[in-house]
Amino acid sequence: MPAPRLILIDGSAYLFRAFHALPPLSNADGEPTGALFGVVNMLRAHIAQRPEYLAFVLDFGGKNFRHELFPAYKAQRPPMPEELRAQIEPMLAIVSALGLPVLRVPGVEADDVIGTLAERAAAAGIDVTISSGDKDFAQLVGPRVKLVNTMTNQTLDEAGVLARFGVRPEQITDYLALMGDKVDNIPGVEKCGEKTAAKWLAEYGSLDQVMAHADRFSGKIGEHLRAALPQLPLSKDLATIRRTLELTVAPQELRQQPVDVASLRKLYTRYGFRAALRDLDAAATPALAPTESVTAASPAPTPAPVAAPSSDLFGDPIFQGKGHYQTVLTKAALAEWIDQLRAAEVFAFDTETTALDPHQAELVGLSFACREGEAAYIPLAHRAPGTPPQLDRDETLTALKPLLEDATRPKIGQHGKYDMHLLARYGVIVGGYRFDTMLES
Image (tube, rainbow, N blue to C red; front, side):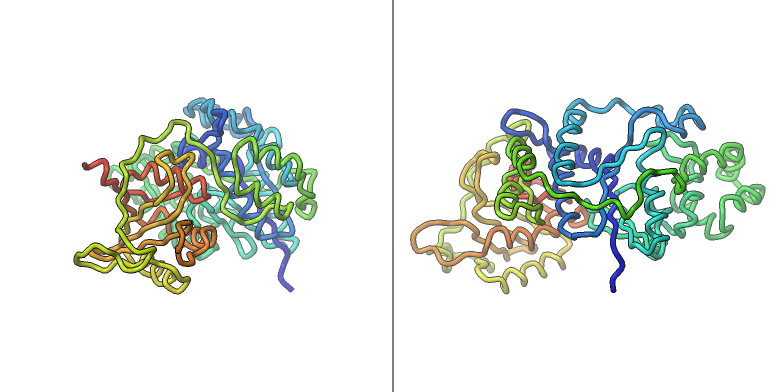
């Protein structure tokens, strides 16, 4: 029998990352929704996995025990942008309406709450997934604990941590201490980066042993190491996630409660999450469907009209020219093109829509190319008389979503800002956008 599962969501980290990674979206009233959209999309994906236990963990705010250890901890961080602050309360309201347990503990950070719950759950035979993009959590990875970053689709188990960082999970705190952390203002060894830290730990095994043999290191890096010796134990302590907090809740209590459909419908309507609203009305439960967003904070410049190849309702193109241009009307043809795009070093894409305003336009087709003289057009919502059957738009976007969102796959476009705003409304956050031909014209 499979072990029960617990997903611990680092809500604070996702809120910040979504705010900085996504376009400045807003609803019809001008309220910012970009970070909210990213978090909601991530939450619905996790809920769709139907884990036995699930929790949304946030920093309590204010100072904590690490500030007592080191008053300069996180001292250099700028104030939270007002556009982000305005999305915290709506986020909490949606999380509550979804029935998810929300944990905020004063005096400690969300990391420590997650660390303690992960430790207890694993000891109780529960498989734990920590949902975060924060590398610090790699220190918690073990036989029953893995780390997943939903924004990059990367999952790390023990072997994955070693492959990614060059050190084992139990060496991560030593690794972090040697490098320091500019984001959290944790001091480290000057000029010691990932490769150097991993090399030292591979050779000596631990921070203690690196410190004990500091006299063996020559050159400037050796001088920097010896200069840092007095503060390295503190740096390690600051980077260490606590796993023994006295929490009043047990992992087995972190069950999703019934969804408050009325409140969720009101919130989705207010913030313009139309696809989520349709799912809610259809099933009265959260579902893994593309979450649509709303209008962008600033309207995108009007794109130049794009001339589509003339054709007889998706038959053979009328124009003459070299190359092969395919209209994709079957799932088999779509699968073939997805394979081609996966194999390509870079690909171009474009949208076909019903309007010049990406906030109001409907997506009716997508085109792709990954080599000269060969391209595909995927009609999705053309309604002219005599139009042949087309692929389902939602199913097609679901199939293409991993490729379009993969930040490691370079993409080219024409007026990408328009396309990205439009696709965001259909729950697709384009990643890896590298070049825009409009900017070169």
